[in-house]
Length: 152
Image (cartoon, rainbow, N blue to C red; front, side, top):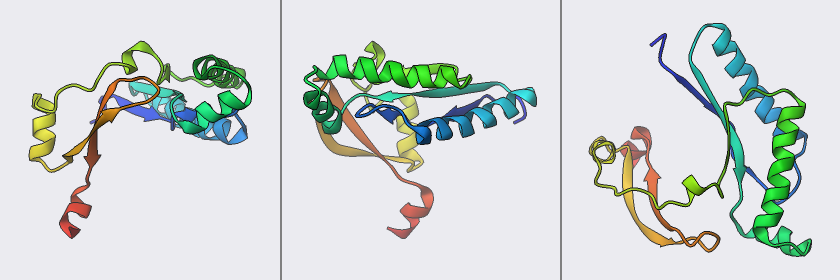
């Protein structure tokens, strides 16, 4: 598939503290790979961003006397600035507090999900709950590789 789009992503970084050299290193490695693929004439989509949910983020905000979202806004902007400082070429910088991430996951019954279930690539989990930070409903899917399925 020489013309198929390549998707490259970093981990989405937790905003419980300021970015450090490890974040920049990881993103730089992905950036090098994205640039190399582009030099080969390939269509690349390079994604990075921040994960702004979790107890550590809430605790870090409380330690600084800030609301979690205000704290996340500040730290996420530092991550974006660090990526810009090093001239990294991501196509999109996502935040898990962006409006598109607040929507509930779609129904498991749609055609792509049914195919994944049929292929035994994913399994529907009984875990359905409310995320304390967003109060959005979350359905958890457990990814299972064919090799791990063969061993179960």
